[in-house]
Image 1 (cartoon, rainbow, N blue to C red):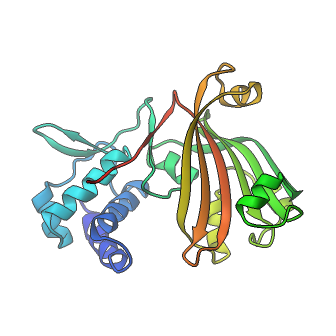
Image 2 (cartoon, rainbow, N blue to C red):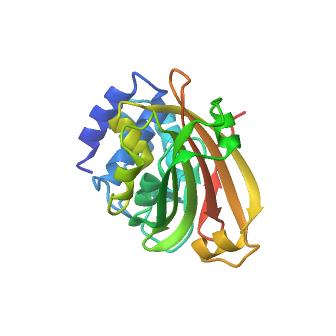
Length: 256
């Protein structure tokens, strides 16, 4: 596994700012995303991986558990742990790790895309302004689009950013070709999302959502409402993401 040396250096850099198991998971995830670890490639054993990364076996086990929940690796009893291959099954999304939709789709080996993208700038629903603790007349950039994995609709996203937060205009976003991430846009403006308050609800598809996601009206969907904050507590992004429950499932690790 030639990329392990690079993984070790990334772990050393990341470990200063987050728990060690998460740093190991993040570095392995990066290697998977960039192709350093190929689909179906077997990982070294936990003791071997711990020795190479200079961390304990328990740390490696916790990191592998995180990646297993995210669907990036799979355990085969009596054989070992492997990088997940590209399949036609469900996409797995962890609620414990903040990841852009674009990165989530890439992590599973699919090609991200968007359909029906609409970008508007101006006053939005008063409830959105209230979520940001802003006046009703506050102006927002509102992005509405359906996210695709290999051309198949998986999530419909309604995203709101206060106009004075985003460095790029709504008009410039409308001209963007291909798939792009609001996380990346904010990062380019020097705004780093640190946490998100997430609420999950079960809803049924309206006729419009059904058409966008390729399901029947009334089909069950998973709705994630997320309010994203910087480390300083600034509210910078609010999303309402409607997940097609036939193509994506959500995971969370609960600890005693």
